[in-house]
Image (cartoon, rainbow, N blue to C red; front, side, top):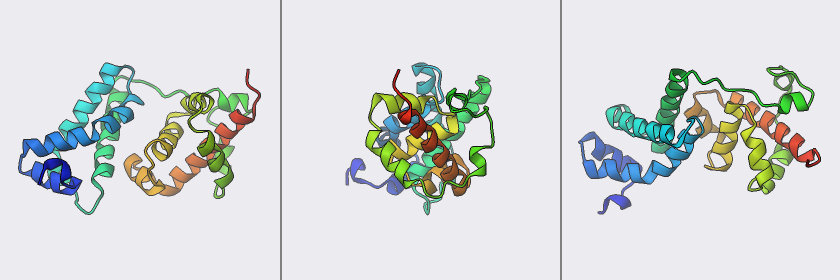
Length: 196
């Protein structure tokens, strides 16, 4: 059986036995996804490439800790997240809150959204889903605070479930859902505002 026909779990088992072809196949399979993920943290293409290299190095180094009951991609993206957080700390980059809250009349860091439970945001989600590819929505997403931006991109770009996003981010699922709801509200407010 060719390596490209093997499942992630089969390849991970081979990596445990230092099979270089299995490492190559997993790297090939996930390179672009990890690069897109790393680019959200990195300040440059070079930094993103360094994060990708670090992610795959950590994958190889910690492959014996991989629990085969978990989805391999979720485990790998958790490694990418940790490598990216370490990078952010090392370079002392601070994530800045967008001007969206101020434009919408809320103070930065306000608990206003946190006081509301966004259990039913289906309408907003459908609206954002329909307009997701538009330049206006893409620009608006880039103004969201990092955790909200990450959740939106994982959900819509990568098609992950809330459970998978929560596992990758190391956050409770309710926190992820709440952040997702707040992000949808902010994006809807932008779409409602007249274009300048």
